[in-house]
Image (cartoon, rainbow, N blue to C red; front, side, top):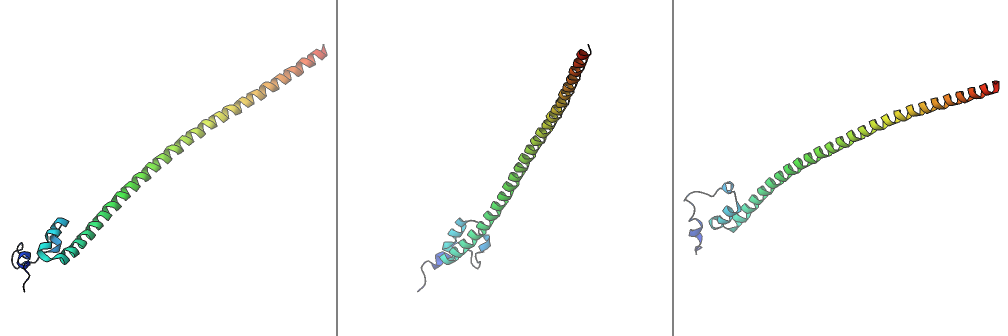
Length: 129
């Protein structure tokens, strides 16, 4: 006995044409195709569609991750460059302070030497008188 739904299966197709799996672009189209070719075809077509959609999502995600990583790398490089520049400036300030302290020490040593000579001369003069 013939299947009573058999005539209904082909009611949406022009006679003599086969349904092209690649023409479907959404799960809705595939579900609608359930009445056209049967549940096995829809299940396998849906799996193909979902597999292709998954690959598209994987590619989009990989692109997004790559862009995100590039952005993070640029931000990290910028932060490192800024930190290094600040450290270089701090080192330069410390060198200036060190030079100033060394000059101060030299001046203090000179004052001490001058004071000692003056004291020695004062003592010598007093002894001579």
